[in-house]
Amino acid sequence: MKKIGIGLLGLGTVGQGVANIISDPNGRHPLVGELELVGVAVKNLQKERNVSFPHSILTSNPIEIVNNPNIQIVVEVMGGIEPAKSLIIQAIRAGKSVVTANKAVIARHGEEIANEAKAAGVYVLIEAAVGGGIPIIEPLKQSLGGNQITKVSGIINGTTNYILSRMDKEGVNYAEVLKDAQELGYAESDPAADVEGSDAADKIAILSGLAFGGAINRADIPTTGINHLEAIDVNYARKLGYGIKLLAISERDNTQTECESSQPLSVWVEPTLVPEENPLAGVNGVNNAILVEGNPIGQVMFFGPGAGSGPTASAVVADILNIAGIQSMSVDKVLNLDPLLSAKSWKSCHVAEEREITKKNYIRLIAEDTPGVIGQIGGIFGQKKISIESIVQFDATNNEAEIVVITHNIKQGQLQDALLDIKNLPQVKKIAATMGCL
Ligand code: HSE
Image (tube, rainbow, N blue to C red):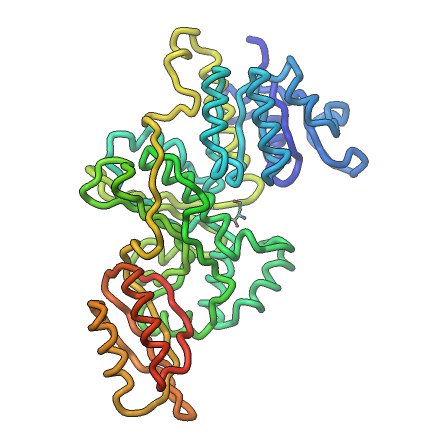
């Protein structure tokens, strides 16, 4: 059998992990031994590298990779939107299948890329784009295809989960842990995409599309990160029996059977109180976990390392092997498969506005510690038809009280209206925090 030529775009952490697997096929799937690393595009050719392949296959010109006739599968692990997106499209147009770990490109341009792949008759696989080493893309596309999925929720950003786990365990504040995480290499020097929630929003956009068969407009996803989270809320949450996790959630109304424009899909990212007994509460450090709920399966949770060289390379190589396996099939069978190896038909999916999302909430208020304050706050919630699950007064010093309210399921529009009125109460100094709550 002729070897299958692989071209790498990028030789960072993930690229090196992929090269290591290809150069050491022993004990792996037999098809790994049929892969040959033919070319690797890097930014800086002069950089000293200790690599498992001949230096002669390095190039600083990525076009050489996408146009190389000896390469059948292009692996894009350079990250960022451009030039990654253009190179993916050029590779497809040159007749090559593509494996990418690039969630930012797929979340924004996935439909365009899928259409290009369809027209060219090649494959684009994205297992490494969400959840690092956790197999979640293929299960949503294939293994769970017999289910009506109702909800996908999860911890899909390892950096923020590491920071939150340490804030919870050590009682320290966000800025302190972030600095430490950067020094230890768990957080980037520019941590914005992780801590502001945008990385998780990219990933939930991709998962939602697969779970509900619809293209999601990434810009419509209400997103709140952990960068304004205070240690005091982590502490109060724990006292109430919850941990705080940055959750990405996508759910449809129970009456819907698929993505329909008349019934929007609720998709959002925010720090969320998770009850201690919920399986997501025990997911700590840089691990990720995705809980999929559907009919008839009930709940299934996928757990594992959400980032890192080895785990992400494991997902990339799984995709390479999928394509390599298909390429060794007969032409007739190949023509019957769609380019994303996806089971569902694809429609545009309408994402609900934030005011329409229904969920439980945690609210922390700072108010004067005077008679009747809690009654007035409760009265406003009542007027807006918001049912309160619990209301607790924590520390009261210098005549100031910290009041924490947990609501039942309500529309976010109701909460926003109530908070406007509560803010205007003379005894209320500040609405100090709002978060989701499971
Ligand atoms: N920055 C991501 C995370 C890893 O912290 O989970 C790659 O998706």
